[in-house]
Image 1 (cartoon, protein in one colour):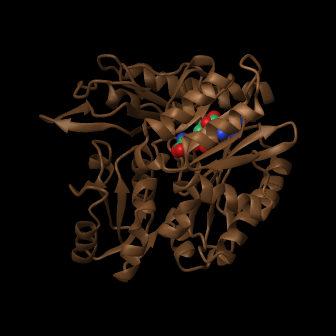
Image 2 (image 1 turned 90 degrees about the vertical axis):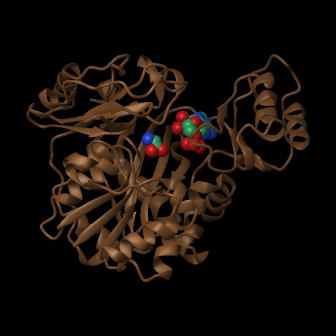
Length: 431
Ligand code: AMP
Ligand code: GLY
């Protein structure tokens, strides 16, 4: 079978690499891909939003399965567009992708299904939102534990945690008055700020059966010790000792099952990867958000450990036959992924820096270097994004996996390269 993967980051490189190992897969194409997918698969120079050209490519090349990496094409209806042409594609429909594309859709659904999540209110303009804050928190100096969120997709930037009234009012202004996040800010959610450690629990579901994947932890803040601005994720590891089997069962029962059921009842049956961003509060796990695709970088350590044929899982999902396949097999060893980033990220950064040492890193045992933002320029691999590489390793323990991943990181150099040095250290608190 020939496979087409949509996207060009570390997650898509990992998907291409893993699917390429299936005995039933002949060729893997990635649109648009990066310098890593150019080696492990074949790149196709078509943009993710160009559905007509992607559909034409899928038809002309007899693509048997298309797999969508990022949320933007899902929210724009790529699955509906392919399905209309009788092309097989893995991912939720546009209606089901609202779970990520609209925070209001998500929160209302969670409330309806009685899934634990932060209390919230919805606002359509700056005046009513500001009035709510002023009424609720009359003193300028008191603690204001709220989070202001633009409703729509804002590349992870539309979420602002607050601790003072002035922060909340400024956040409201950014969303509703300055329209910093464009249309995504046409509506907003103000919710209570929760305290606790975060965990990413992903499940593959065909709308009926749920295959929960081992829990992972991301590292969103840019700097060591969870300091600095938020990023797309500076590293991840799986499994995490923070979520043992009993907690995972509770998350399935209280969060995943009711969500999948209510999606079905509301005629948006969810097929694809349901990613619950969960915070472990004193009252138990609560949902911070849902994503409708694999997490990046969480996907990389997960796929490093997956021993079953990923193609079987994806096809069973599309066919509504997930209940027929055996449970996925995982390498018992933990995996960690360290993101190497460009100088300046998550702010402005330069591209085009030649990257050296990739072969030395690749030669280390139990290591795989997934490319995130890379390109080929004059025959050389160069940086082409903020997050550039996701260096991934397996080990007999989390510390052994960490050691091996950073050994690989040390092999790789480019002008301005940096990474967090403490990926997976959070796990040590729970061991
Ligand atoms: P979201 O896109 O809604 O997951 O928000 C992005 C990040 O903001 C989360 O990963 C959390 O770190 C933080 N966050 C979002 N909502 C809350 C909340 N209610 N309480 C505390 N932190 C939050
Ligand atoms: N790593 C967080 C995300 O993929 O949204």
